[in-house]
Image (tube, each protein chain N blue to C red):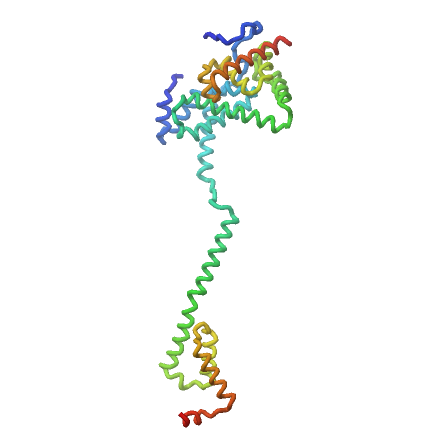
Length: 182
Length: 149
């Protein structure tokens, strides 16, 4: 699918007659990248689906006020990331259980997940990732899987590039140690 | 694609391949799902009535307005009653009905009218009444007073 520029999407969205079509284009253009970003954080498909829907609904409501000081994709990524963090925090509060237990539960779910097709090593990597704090896991996913630049991650998370590099470095070390223990 | 930050000693076989899957046709159906949700949001925005005030303040405002209306009605109608009494008096005089009325009937009407318009009573009215009462109590003949004047 040929990508349509941010400017064109925004121009079409500003026109009442082409508004819905423009948003449909935006959804088609970014849904997969956002979905995988969310999925790697919450692991479960149904949860990822809910969060992705909420992300686009929020974007639809706020797109009129989009200031264009970043790319639409970066802006969407930011909304999706905030939705993920909120979801994970609520999940921890809802069950009144320590964070470690939630991560253990997510790890167990992954083993029986029909939509997880990774091999043993990939499963171990996901389990290792679940031992990281949410923000560190975000940084690792964005850098390792999504191949985003530190500057882009910095814009999304509102964290300095230096702090992100340190966070990624710590994440890698922890994953190494986790995998060695197995 | 070069990744300088990938640790060298990650276990063999570890790669960036996506281990997750989605149900068949998920990404084909998703835009439609979003379009439906947006339509629902727009629909509920049109139908939903959000009162500016909660029911309790609304009732209080309604009660206040009714009270103001009733009090205003009472106040505005008071002078009209006096005017109506004056109208009756004029009518009685003009039509010569006064001649057919007895003194008692006139006094009764006068008392009734005065009782209803105490607000208009002047100080001199009460002084006259006091004098009349005194003369009656002392059994003074009005002709004696006229002769002495």
